[in-house]
Image (cartoon, rainbow, N blue to C red; front, side):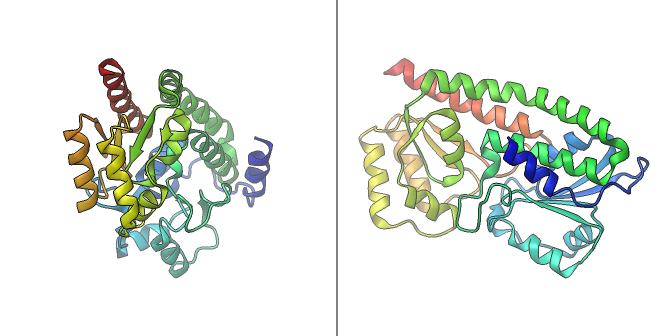
Length: 293
């Protein structure tokens, strides 16, 4: 955590000049970061999330003039980075604002374009992001620093059931082989102690909107046909003919299919409600497999 703390201090910028009566205008590239920012900022922030559509692939998002206005007037912007929201970087460049502070999640994680950008599926990184956002809020609005500390403590408590469920799944199913149609599940699989054995090249290709190499498709089919995975995880927002066929094959072979998403589902859920619901579905699928084998 000392490295993270150093990053937080280095990233604080100028000390707070905003008065406590000023509501910080916060813009988040995606609504999962927006949910976290809203909980950390409480009544002292107004959060606008740009990418919210649960039925669209966020990788394909095209910005609008409304988005440009939001970025132009923002006090604080949260971006994912690592190539995930390049459209936002272009809007920031086109709408310069010297008083605006920008936090790109990829930066303190030392991640770049080409790396797996699904950082919000790593529970340790979510806590680091929350620490960083809190420190930034306190730097921008130092008069309300103690309030933001209280909000951070409350969010830590709100996340505990999420962490507890991860620990429970890890304790019960560590080492269990699973597959995923997309790299979205890689970080969470590691946190859960699951053995993600689907071809990495396949998962990365689908995540980036490319056709996976034919050999990896054949490998994936063999994993399912041989029932070598206990659960198939798929990204509900990036569906292709190949992934749909894998889902059908899994179902036909008695392998549960569990969906995860790239944005909040439902859109009015908090980050932790969304994650807990997905984890519960996965836990139930793993339990069902354990009972039948």
